[in-house]
Length: 202
Image 1 (cartoon, one colour):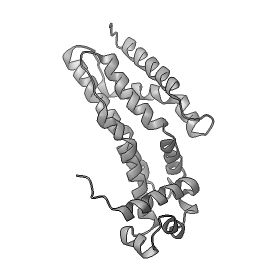
Image 2 (image 1 turned 45 degrees about the horizontal axis):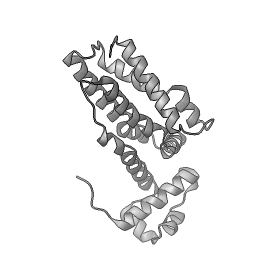
Image 3 (image 1 turned 30 degrees about the vertical axis):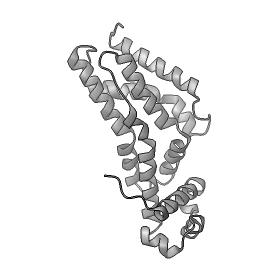
Image 4 (image 1 turned 30 degrees about the horizontal axis):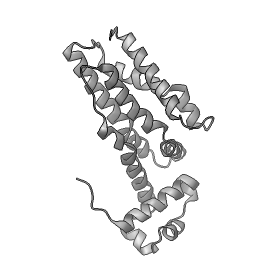
């Protein structure tokens, strides 16, 4: 069940997200976040005990927002190419979004101070995609449409094809996130290689 919408709490989270993404954890102050919200410091502390709890809340909210496309993914057992493209599209939109890239960089920068956030990011992002893909591949395998010996390994290999060097370059700031045409080329190549690797004949 979703939490009731609270305008002041949301304003604090929005201001905190801007501050953390722009300045990192250490460079963002509670005072500046309260001013940007705008709320008083007592109001901020009424909703969040301190900067650490606020940071964790921002990360959690961002993870939920980045996963919104997954709820819309529809797969078809009779058309594995289309089903894989749908899952791949959601995953690529998830990991190459500019805010997602900023979020990953921020988590890496603050990993020593907040080791639990790495697990939060994984549980809220890659893990659900991996679970959804594995469930779909299991259906394809059970139905005899696409024989797969090792569901988990095949799922991980498929998602890794969608990341690889390009995603790492984006994280390092060596290139911008992918445009729609580049995303489609990447998805088509990954789906084609995956199906050929499993001896699928359309």
